[in-house]
Length: 207
Image (cartoon, rainbow, N blue to C red):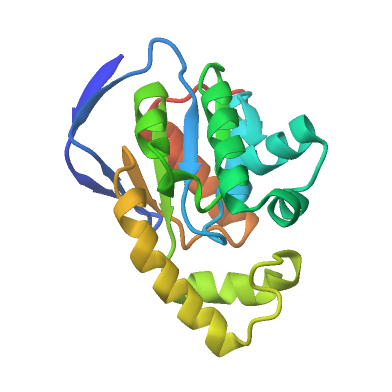
């Protein structure tokens, strides 16, 4: 099945979704890549989509950790960011060959090398675009789990989000689909989001 879409779709459930000007064919299920800033809900939505569709969920950071028997934090500390980004690119190219998978990428994954182009060639990229106030709210609650922002004050965190988004949005905006991801904070909201994306991408349903 193929369709041409060049519009923002507004659903009754306060979601909006933009599909870029291209034709998608879903006869064979290529990887779906979820991209976006930390706190945008990539893992939350990815796991929920996996349960709803039966597709395998892959967290790219966890995939790297399993393959290299070291945490991302330790790889950064022992080898540096350049080495990590090289590893990340190699592992991304590896999962690009998988079928029926939903891949949650790290916040910086699309912003290095030609990673975003690799993802767009290999599958469907979905940018989760949460508002800055919602990102700040989520990251305040979960910052202790994220070494990069754990020691930041609220003011520093807000500034970091603003500055980092300015740098990353040109890469994020190359995604095939942009999904407004403010409504992922309850089971009902997550289910609504899954239903919306599944309908647009014509994903299979197992429940």
